[in-house]
Length: 341
Image (cartoon, rainbow, N blue to C red):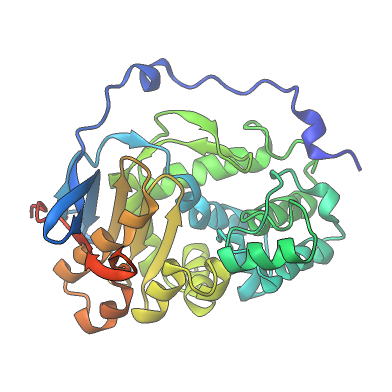
């Protein structure tokens, strides 16, 4: 079988000109970093929480500005794969929507998806990488391993994408090209769930087409997925992620901890400071940290959930690690009080 990367000579589509001309979003302070009472750093960003009826519950900054949702698109991509006939066990479906840590269970799961469809790792078109999780990466390196596609955090999604090609008789070769039938279906599904057309198109770090949408649209999509009946494709993805949160991220990861802490909650992060949440009542939350700072995602997300009335006690374990001085706590990351109803 020809390796999918051998088709890299196919031209990528140009992003709409307006995406390059768009001014920077009007982000506002979302998270403060304190040290002995002094605000040492500030993370800016935008956010929105949409109720099931589409009304705005909380917002800050410019949630209508287009941005790249990065890996927070994975649950939406997983919905598209189910529409195309993907039929795998729930733990492997959760892995399909994952940015996994690269633990043995994650690598074995991606390999199992391939095996179920008579494929091997040679079919994968994602980039090579070390495991994303710190402990998993250290163990991988101690064993003398190097970067691979299976270890890369998107391998579950890519394994399922190649599987859908087999199921539908589509060419596996070139499955990442934006005009491949698979990626056309993914694009249309994301448009349907967000309720908006992509503002721009690029390529994600793993190689998949990447569509720019607003926080507003992404919050709408997560609310729909989280509230969907389990018999629907959206509901199947949500149920799998909730039942197997360890497959969506991994042990020690905040996304896994958040889903364990709040029954029924759906969560997925994304590179460059993205956090998406869906609640079973249809509320969707979308957070973007403008500088891409990963440490700022959870403090502001937890504060939004508190304001939405999510049980505060269940969120106490998700507080960010303290700011240290000489090994002792001297400060904290805290949400800025700027949210408007």
